[in-house]
Length: 535
Image (tube, helix red, strand yellow):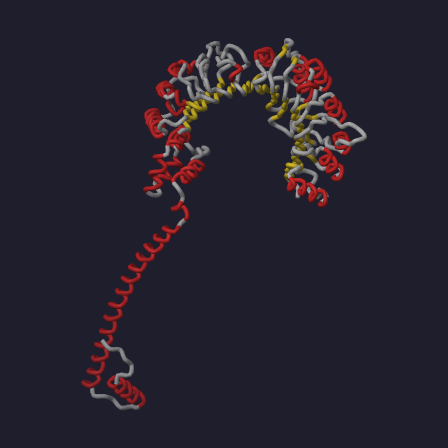
């Protein structure tokens, strides 16, 4: 159908209609009917053509959308992720495979099953065939097994599903070393088949953590003597149980052992000389004496952490820890205090520990408070000086970490004066937080001068090589630079870390010239310097 507006016939008809409209001439009825019929027919043909064209346009739009989708999909061929080696993709998957935290609306059994199912890996495996192959075909992604007892009794059918997921994870992990985490909060044995299955794979355990009754270990009997890869283990059992845990005497590669018990016969260990890092955690104050006494079995190859709480002491209590005097060859102990505590209780407990020990081979000593800075440890000065003297710390103590310790400047200077063998020191100013803790400027001009070596006068700890400071910057920057310069020695870098305490020093900046000079020393290779929270 032609719609050309220049058609002569159309033009003449249009002119006729215009003339008739301007005049009062009336067409004969038959001619008027013929004209209207002609126009109506042409309108119908126009409508039919428009409908055909609109349908064609709709078809083209649909076809174009399909082509656009295909074109956009082809753009993914240029995505960098497609060019990543499978090994790199697997590493990314490992970072993504973090167990989700349960929410208030999550059924209790669901997060426990999710830990076994590794849902993030399953989601990634559905993206494409390659990702599916990588996720399910990379054994290292499936090596963390988290087993919780409530997954085996909390709802009908859950136990069977949990066993299926455990078997699947063990199969997908191939022959790779495993990290096994077992938690039993109910003292029920519904998870016995799962424990027995895990024991069958004990030759692959590299890291194992058990927070369960000692009675659970009877279902792990197959693991005894079959721990060739085990390097790190943590055991937290019920302190009131008398049943010993005798699984770990033979573990040739075991180097880290943590137990929520005092040292003693309750949990068996390989020879202690084999264990580089031994930790007793979550001890009550009543357990301290037994643990300190058992330190006599430790040697210079051991580092040992004593982690305890004093929540069981009332404010007015002055209990006697009754520590029997003990001599220990331990090389690097750490004393860690958890929870909230009263200052005088902390000082009393630390003082009793110091008074009950002789440490003739001590190389390093660390103090930590899990609730620092609100609850810094309180320094038992007299007891420490006595410990220094009878243990001859002046000859062998090389490292002292006091970041979490409330010690005064005079006390610190007196301690450093009797520790000339120190090569590493960590100290801190303290900031009171939410009505707890203490405001104390320990890193002062007086201390910096005492640490500065000059030809005219000897300095404290002359062999210092590493200094870690947590400071409120209440000192003279030039004096700090002088101290650093005095510690530089040919052929050996001096290491210094300065972490600016964030509260109360927002407007304080170190002198720019001092910072520039420190950077020059770093570039020259004379200094390793970290400035955290500053310019």
